[in-house]
Amino acid sequence: MSISTQQLQEAAKIFFHLLNRKMVLTNDPILNPYFEEDGVRDAIKVLAEESRTRVIQTADRLHLVARPEGSIFATSFTQFKRRYGEVETKKHFYLMNLIVFVFLAEIDIPSTSNLRWEHAGVSYYILEKNMTQLLSQWQKENKETEGKFSEAYGLAIDDMAELWSSMAVDSDTETVDERISSTRKTHIGLIHTAMRLLRDEGLVFIVEDEKRVIPKIELYERLEEGYHQQARYEEMRDLVLTTLSTGGDRNA
Image (tube, rainbow, N blue to C red; front, side):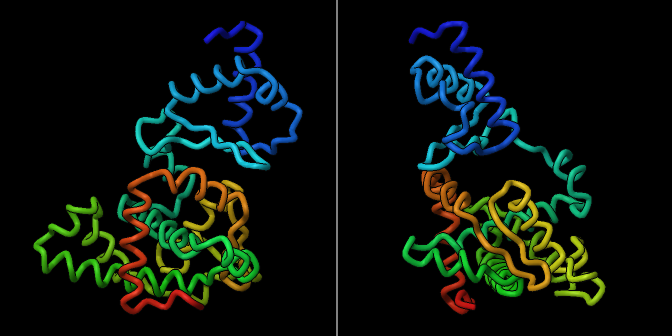
């Protein structure tokens, strides 16, 4: 692999542009060297490997995502808490991650069905109902297996279930002028905070007056080219869907 100084400079410019933007349209002129020169692509590959990130190329965009482990760009809990003040403890952090995962499992369906979610979106109350069912059933199974269920899947099930059960579902004071207040005090408030994570990454629209979230095509690209390559994602999606299929409402 031979990379010139000029190619390395072009690669660095593209890599840090991706780092700042998270995703860039393939017709952006800044990406021309990426598509035209092998050396530039090779240099970007090296930068990605060393920083434990990954460049995902789709028909219309390049995405830059952190790898599941070891990325220097991964967000620590302290950084996360500083940005989202509603996240008081790691238990709230765990719940928000599970909320995001339940949403992904809800929309990660065959492409012929994607149009339904792209137009109608997913109600916060469906996410709330599915979260309640998941945690109830998982806590029951964890108790029956004396903690082995939680250990097998690497989930803080009892911590999440206890915190979730201590929170109200909703509050009349959460919506002001048809906008939802992010809060750690209620299920809907925490769900809204979790969906903001995806909105801030440019992956969803949030219809606040309807308490509904709509996935964007960019999110489906991440799922198809990124998450579907990860065994952990596939394992957890199967676990969530199997649990919900025993009684959760996934069709409203």
